[in-house]
Image (cartoon, rainbow, N blue to C red; front, side):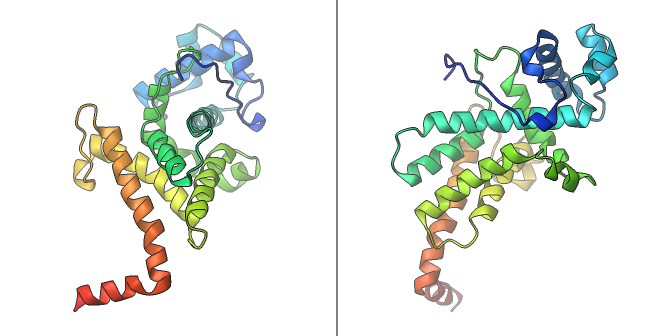
Length: 245
């Protein structure tokens, strides 16, 4: 994967000039990722970014209308990067269950560095998504942003997961809800393990955190998918009744 050249295409509504096409644009992406990772979105400004890249602040506005648009651009870049990794690693695999396990693995550990894209630090961007990703849509203008296609990459990823769920169990009633829950669960538990450990059973142990989150996702995902089959034929209700009695 590290030696593969990947072209990440971001929705055109998220920029005025595609930053990936110019040297200055790539520097804007590179340094904004590093700065947001270090100081957070609240403290990040185009003024600070302009000083960091030694360029006039108006030059940044040629690419992005404001810092929120830049932020959502970065998140979309990340979700497109996740989708690219999923497509690469699930090629020629017939089993839907195996493909879904690979998807969960990528979601749990999306910080793989790609040396062919030098201007994006995927590890830092992954930390931004885990810590601040929800800010992209938890705000008053979310409906307007949604109509403009700001969240297409994220929705397409969830749709891919939902399709796999239905391929495994066509009778499962909540494939989209499960898909988005799995993605959010991965990020929440990564964050909780690192900062609020009493809110998760996942442990922030060296070189084991992403695997622990993957195990959690598989337990939830396949347990729910297959449990619904039991419910449909009545076995699950009987099991629950016997436990209660």
